[in-house]
Image (tube, rainbow, N blue to C red):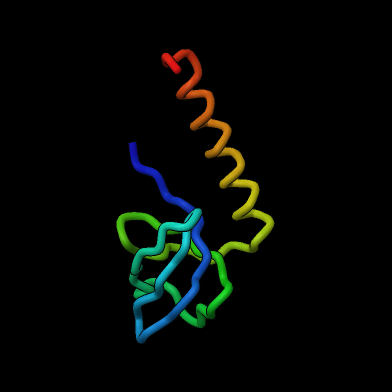
Length: 78
């Protein structure tokens, strides 16, 4: 299964942004997007920022994924 995640842009150097996803920071390519600024949220897949989304949409998507993670771990031994 492929998964694209929303992440906040915290730094930019040329065509590479550093994004933060729940405390994990990683570099991603901005080759597919123009005019990205620090504080923007982007959808990241395999090291590329694919699209820009607003903070509310990012929060909604992250909440859904967090809920899916909880459901995936239900039933596992504590």
